[in-house]
Length: 540
Image 1: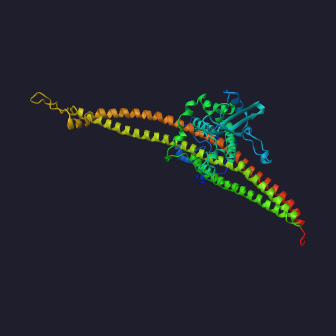
Image 2: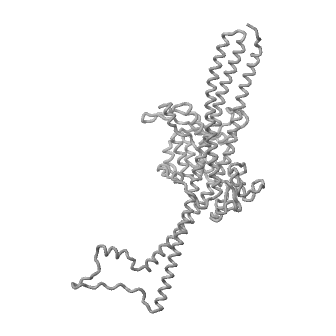
């Protein structure tokens, strides 16, 4: 996803022209992490002239760092830890929590260190009930074994808090809430439906293990307490944390406050390519998920129909003599095929469809993340536009002031005393001044600029103050943009490495499930074939 290419050539040395730029797949890479960096430095500014040049920059990548994005470096290793679990989690390899799929049956694959071992119906004080998911963290090599219980809403709250703290990171998804369709078909029992609970167990388990492999999220002490304390509820965990205020208030993270996307005057071609690829990836993964769900449902229906057909063959065999053995064998093979098809549907649901669903949700999270980065860039451009406008106004006002001073000098040189002062009010016969005391004349007089020179100088002073403020704002927004670019890029690179590994596991799981299904069915039908061949035509 985040391969680095120079503007002159690709990784294999092939020349890269500007016209060929969009054709490359930014996500198609398995480069090591150390190779995904540019020659830029974190302190370098985001130069608009560089953006205008597009791919003509010295070091430009599709999803690697560009000028102003900062060097891509792994997170700094921790030297201090908030608790023992923090120390352990930080020292373990990714495979502890996301074991690679190997060439053995899917039910014999290694289990992650964090598992959800049960879902228990729990009564509330008010008379209601909820499903509590039992989380077990088991790391024998480190003498770690914890159990805790949390309901779905607490997982949701944990993810929400992580997304507010680390809004520049790709936060792992959790299973979606029950749909209206779930409540319509299952009514009040939707929350207690066994299939829904089992799916949530698997996907919530995946969420916890993905957090444990994220270099930033795994450091949060709220996550450690979520796994450690068997009695703690989310409210007590949050109250004791440094993020208590953040967790209680309404979601106002930068990601949640995104507005409509506006066009950039000088877009960053690097992130434009990222956005375009993400849209394509989202479309592909959504279509894959849609059809995989249909296939799984079809396989479940086929398994049911085969089971019924097997029963028919077995019943038929009871009424025959010569055909009995063959019919019974066909019935047994059909029953085996039904069981194998059901197992195939289950395996594909758990090992293929659900992980693909996670990536459907991941794609949406990445779209939001890139949109946030786009908004940061818009703010920087808006500040530049305001600064340019104000500097233009100042130039015009200073030119007017210079011209006024020149005219004054000319008039003084000719003996003039400048503009005539307005006559003093003439008292009337009663000794009162004729100056208007109110009404329309007084209002009009207040609107007349009686001292344009002072007004002009006052405006110049205000403009200079505003320009000074905008220059400071420009530095701040540029720094925020550079930091955002760097942090977003780091997490996109991390996500890509995980994605490649996950897609490998999904495809290998697909192949293993299909292989084991066909082996089982083929063995059953090979046995049936022997009995069928024993049928002698013409026998009564």
